[in-house]
Image (cartoon, rainbow, N blue to C red; front, side):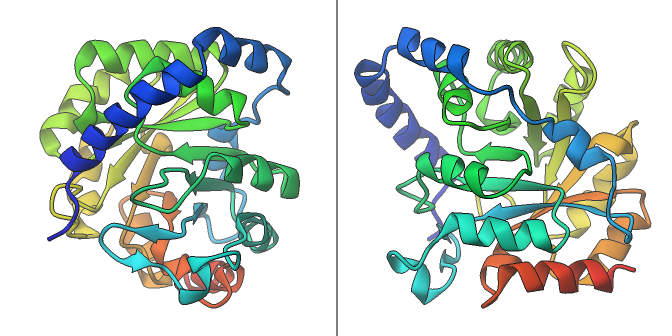
Length: 276
């Protein structure tokens, strides 16, 4: 049975309680004060630099609860996030998404720094952010953007995290799956200031792990500014990109399809060429 979102969040809360004791917020704030300014993730994703008219956030991911290990060689030291990111950069990625959850995705926060040293692209920390401490931790680790999942956050939590992210000059990818949550978060897109928030529609139901690309196609009309809309999960072919482009969705996040390839960078190039 697939790991549920509720299980992941419960584990995150337990892990977070321990981490906050080990590293006080004041320590993270000091690290952030000394850090280089964040790269502009929002601009990188929305400027549509690729000739296909599509912008790809290419994901670095070792494993997932639904699919397991992406490739056998990723079980040990063969997983080199910086090399994967370099391949993405050389083949048309607009930005990088990096999974940092250890238990369920085999990630690590240190992967962000390794990627940042290897490529000039902005980096999204893709994890289960439920507490302001994690936003500070993300910026201290070198992340330029964070993922906020609407299904995991109530109204006040969401607003607080949006305000903090903007204060730290970080982009938010605000992700939804349910129609109800899309309607709930629409007023917050562009809050507290425009240019810091993207809206992601996840085609994967995180409760069942089922994927349906048509989910974005059905919900896209409910998004007024499609320029900030990102379709996530289930994107495998140039035809998929053309389907999304037909409803004016031009930003995508692609992970599993690329990471299962022997050469993720070449897989990205092929995907973008097929969209032309």
